[in-house]
Image: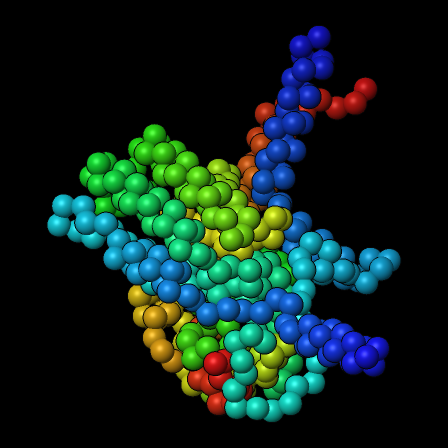
Length: 194
Length: 210
């Protein structure tokens, strides 16, 4: 009997250690419903405002992360928030989200934060960094999603250092100093030491 | 009192501020390079960014289960990218913020990990991480070594494009296209800031994630 229990315990422990701790997961049907809604967007006048392909990919990658497995209740909360956000955008009548008023942006931010906090299957926070104009979804201190929302939201980043401006500024400064010294000398403005 | 103390002080502060603004790009670069040769200890690139990359030897297989793949958190070193012929061997991070790009190559999180039969978009700085990229040739092999598979891509196009060129990338295609990019030209006094040196590749080996 003891041997059987020992064997079963060992097998169970072995099975647990073989399971990947942080494994990617498929996008379940509830998460897919959120992706579909984000892809559909909101109609403002004759135009549709929706997330870009890249932003939808970010959402898809997020849903495949370990620990992200939305339930029906989670999805319902998010879908309701998307509807509320869509209503704000419709009421504002803008098709370029960067042109929303500050009040509208704050309202959308509050809705997004509340929706993120309402997800029960995983503890998430939604943050907006004013300085870098970046939105982030975090699990604890780990950043799961991060995207900038500037006017020129760029997929292709600046990956070079350009010192041209510094070079020209220094050159102008240098020339100005030389000219100042030359002018001072010519007009006997420099005072000799006694 | 004003003439003796405050005016010179004010002038000094303004000058220091101006010098800081003008010199910052040069100082940052110089300190970054200097820290590699005069530091007492080896630089710890993982001080601020985490790593899940194990660098293990992997068995060859045609597929890998999704459960073996970890979608990293933003800012995590998850793979190594190398092009042996041009001595390029860099860390690959998930995410491409300014901070991440100071440490290695950064992958845009709106693209996909290797093995998903979807595009990968990876950037790196032209004077450091991707400096060697200027010597790449057609048919060179780019290797991305992850914890779950080794992926090899063959270079099939090398070009220069504007950063906002609509043909730069197509991240919704169902093709595993590798796109590496860096600022162009490869010099410090570039003048132009909107060109990118872009290398496109297609996958020639590595397991599909199922």
